[in-house]
Image (cartoon, rainbow, N blue to C red):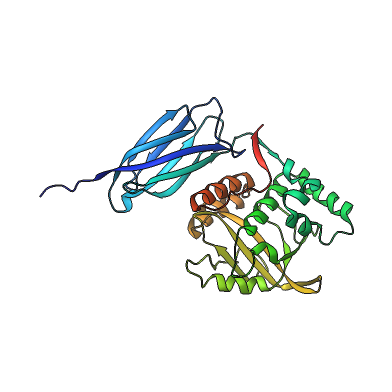
Length: 316
């Protein structure tokens, strides 16, 4: 019997960006690895250009066509995406982002005085509950000084603004951020807020949509929670919304419930538990810079508007 043959012709253009969301331009060459779904490496080589076309990649017409593309460079954290399903006569675009090992946040577009222009919905939300604009600016500035905490806040609120529910976006149901309550502290991996309980109804409806965008999630790692939902739109960097319905507060005439938003690295619960929660338990929390890169890559693959949390990451 003749051995089965494979067709050739898979094509993918790999574009590598840096934390500024511009094409990578550092002097260190890029190491790009291409691996098929059978775990065979089809290319692994250094490149001096940020955009590389790979052609004539073998096609198997099964899971072997689920390719992985990985990029690495000296002084940067590795990045990759899987799966990228290749097919004959189809050009796949794979955009990856490398974050410097030593980096800093550039919040120029997220300054309080700029928010009214760059993201007015954020400024209105962030100001709620403050005695006046100066008080709102002061508490916002305190968070900005912490760097990672503001990056987390901007990551999650930007992601929630991109979640289209049957009615409105997820962000529109947030009424007030909790800034300085030690019981519900702002952290580099999550924050707490008061939300219109209609948000729960909207997520329940979203669970019934095709394709489904949310599913039930475990709240076991969120003490005091009553229910939790996980976005499942992307392979990585999905929003999780955990509700604490026993905590309520009247905000602008609406009896709100406490919600705890965060973004996990991984969609798969096992990977999240083993590779994220376990690491966090040892003292390392979810890195907002990694979330920024993962969410940006996932959004590009999904064809969504660019993930722009009003900051960039630059080499220190």
